[in-house]
Length: 183
Image (tube, rainbow, N blue to C red; front, side):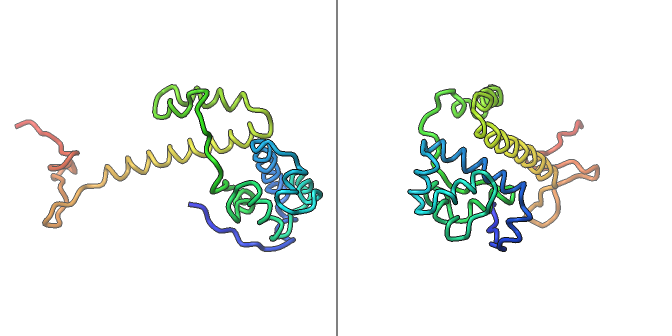
């Protein structure tokens, strides 16, 4: 689902100021979720604290080696920072251990959207912006999948002899979508 984003150097980073801001929000949110300071992240990643500060303030894009170390310290996959900069999301990271708001338990029910939005609204910035962006992307993907599924169901099914199972009016004559006509 996610593509590998090539490292195209400093000019790419300089031209992607808006994307660096997005990366900064994700890094700050992830660091806070891990309950560590900038200095602790720098120590874990074995990079200069100024590198973490510049990344979180969106003033500089770190060198590839530093990005890889920071990704590892955040429990992200290699390339996750570039994926975020391109509008994607981190591939990995721990899932929540519990469901205090009942959001996971409500998945697939009519209460899910209400509970999810309440949890998102209760988050502090920048986590709220990041999670809301992810949630809206997931809702959009769900709608697209539902449309695709509806389109696939409308395609006539083929019988074993290679003919489609529709009558002259285009209605299915066999299978789960068969049209029952009066005699």
